[in-house]
Image (cartoon, rainbow, N blue to C red):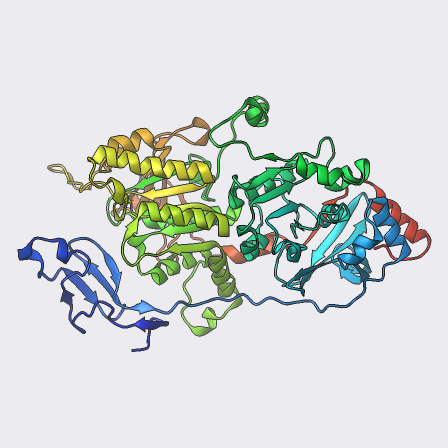
Length: 619
């Protein structure tokens, strides 16, 4: 057999089980059982789906290995046209910003007509070429607009890389700035090993560092990375994320004094000022040491605005009662088949759609991985494709691209160790910028170095390791933890709801965890209850608060309801939602390759007006 369920098989029957049989000994746990039980056939085999389920250890395993399906993104490249002969007026404008014509020629800055969406017509633009290995990869076009703004766009569907990346290939140090004008200023001052972000910065929300994902190898060999970002909220937001991704131990912060950006500093203080800014750069403050100035902005915001709610998942009734910060972890529990993993998936989909977070899963509970990917894809898309037409539709392809870019599965064939998982999490923070790590479940991702300790000591070591990872890398961890086997009380019909203390090592779980969530299914009313077992800070939610949802078998989504969840079943109305959330999001937000930027001075408008008087197009 070459293919199963649409996936090409790499190794058929990897455990050499008796083909076609319905039961077998378990290759995972049989060797560790008592001699009399080692040959008991506890592994249920389903050859149609290629899945084995052990009735003893609970392991769900793939009977075959599969060839990885690579989704390679196709990029377009602009054609290089050597339009580097610049008009006198453009040269004069750059010189007014202290950038010489020599620097413009060296960096191949171009000028030419280009259709710009902000003006809805062709206008004269300044063009910043992006080369890698001397090959043109992208171009940023920039034109002036009224009221001190400038419009920009990148070449459509081109790869995002840093500007001037070729000049840091072999250097041990690099400077990162926010825009090409700042980069040109450093080059003009004799600092060639400078790169610029292609898409600027944002004041809040997720920082788009796709360019770093595509070029991370260029920064791995650096001993020092200088960050010279604008002295505004947006610039500092990107700087903070770069420190998280590149490592605080490598990063040095450039003090721009009272100036907004490196170009303004260069204009005001002249030659040598940017070189001096690097000589005086300070290392990122030591970890675990906090001064008042580190807290001052947050403290002032607290005085003026109070505590803000944390990150939410997009389910209104749940968001009103629960939110979280990064740098923390959430423990999710519930009896088997209550929907814990499914609700965690919905949380992650929500974080991705609302904030652009990238997610990593270490989830032996959700094997095989392609079925887990199916569960996530259905939540994004609102449906599962039933034929090749749907499978090849544009709506499904953007969902697949979203998962490929933003969701990662950590997979170990030989078992999961927490230390290895967290080490892989660190790598994914640096290379892909993940903001959320899911560990599902706790009992199958073991902390091997502490296995010889008692349950309370083991749990303390386990949660301390997760807490350290969360705080150091500003990541949210969601930990799924099964309770001990729950039993119905005499005369009770329904299974009791577990608490924090019903998790093995529960006392430490309650004391140490920031948040706890219970997922509990009411089979009679076909409702799922989500209950806050613990919320550490009152601004983030309400302890013991409950929300109720219907679960859709069509797409695996938890859906809001109308009616009293404690009332009769026929009065509860689900608000089913089968929309493609990714497609809706693309309609809502404009193309990130196109945008506006505030100009710090009025010179763009002045030049624009000067050109228009001469009946010449602005650049």
